[in-house]
Image 1: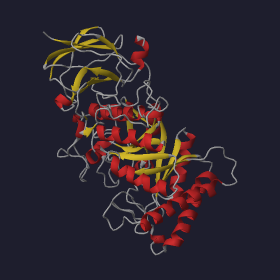
Image 2 (image 1 turned 90 degrees about the vertical axis):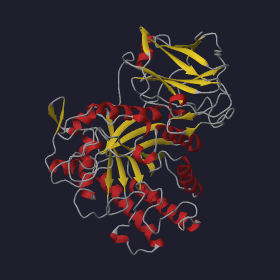
Image 3 (image 1 turned 60 degrees about the vertical axis):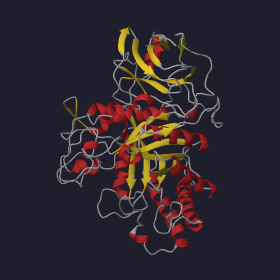
Image 4 (image 1 turned 180 degrees about the vertical axis):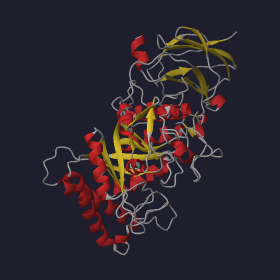
Amino acid sequence: MSRESFFFAEGLLLALLLCAGTPSAVPGGVASLSDGEVDSRESSGTAADPAAASVRIGADLSFIPQLRSLGATYSDGGKPVDVLDVLKDRRFEIARLRLWHSPDEPWHGLDSTVAFARELSTRGYDLFLDLHYSDSWADPGKQIKPSAWAHVAPPALVDSVRNYTEFAVSAFLDQGVALRYVQLGNEIDGGFLWDTGKVGWPASSWDTPENWNQFAALLRAAMEGIDLAYEGREMTHRPRIVLHVSSGGDNEKSRRFIDHLVERDVRFDVLGVSFYPWWHGGLGELARNLRDLSLEYEREIMIVETAFPWTVDGFDDTENFVTGATSLPDSYPVTPQGQQSFLRDVLSVLEHLPGGRGHAMLYWEPTWTAVPGGPDNPYENLALFDNAGASLPALDWKQSGPREPSRTVQVTGDFNEWSAVAPAMTRIGPGMWGDTLAVRAGCHLLKFRTDHRWDVPFDFGGCEGEDDGCDIELDGAVCPTAGKGGALGRIEFAEDGLYEFVLDEVHWTYRIRRVP
């Protein structure tokens, strides 16, 4: 690989597999596959390309009309800006809007949502419609039926869902707003339209075939409503159907949910997940889950909600989701730079999913700053603008253009609990980095981490079954890497001792040598 093509890549992560017979851990404590266990679903046709897949980015922007009405202002580089312009300049392509059935305020109803969608469409955003099927917030803890349907019996509720979905989608189409994505329910891990469409975890009273059948019937009715809205229209593109769960870091929960719906012929195009690290775990859990889902169901994957704090301070009277007492995984600092690093690493998880199935990553409400007179805000320290409305570095989480040589490189692995604050390697020449580590005999998993950024895949194999093309024993042989994020082959460490690690960014090689 040439120097130019190397520096075009967004960061370097080299997985070093050190041969032995125990599973290795990845960040967040997720065990990798045991030795010799090869994922049969992954073949040359579905493996992640060494060149990262292009992943779209966007955001939930539903609060913007309300914030505008309250006088919210924003700036970028010290100059006042229209917030929609600055987001577009930063390569945000998708605008997600939530729609409530009969809200008691004007901002989430059909008329106002269609009007804002028209504006977004004229400004070049692709529209993502999030149907909550509720009069207010819907999430894993509450899925309250619209008041108009409170006493509708299950058979009739299926008709209500179909008719309402057709009516709502038609309202956008009638105004010339093309919908690129339509999401059926919001974080529907436990179903929606409770209690009719409520489902549960094993041993729950809601985990019955009848409950899952009712839930699936409601989802199928919603899909039929979308079909009816498009019937007879001269439109070449229909929206992708998105199912959204909150279990971004929970593979067991995600698999169980999808299996139930697949068994009941619920069709969908995209699997969307939420990933808030204070609720859903570390990047290791996310990467393991999304890789498995992309292989098992062969659907596009979206992270439809994510966020990270830039400070632990609050700027209003509402307690925030994340405070100084909140436990955050993966050692990212709660700073503007830490927020940016986290988002770049989450994006990299999607970029390296097998088969290029990582489709898009959406930030939840990046403009929701603390505005006097606004809704109670537990989120202002998670926005991508500070409390004065000034843009933060994380707005640039999707880099473009050639990448400069790394400023810092770290060696991190199971020996230091995958620390994101491990000591930096020493620059020993142009594009050359060195470090000396004590390594015990056996199997370890190590990575080079550049510019405080993870890259993925984190590795999901063991020492067996990996590339045997480069076998470093103790002789210090030079090995080419397998490309960005690739596994580097089996390496024998026959004894405990000190080893010198050298990374050459210019020629895309590494060397490990036993220190006498």
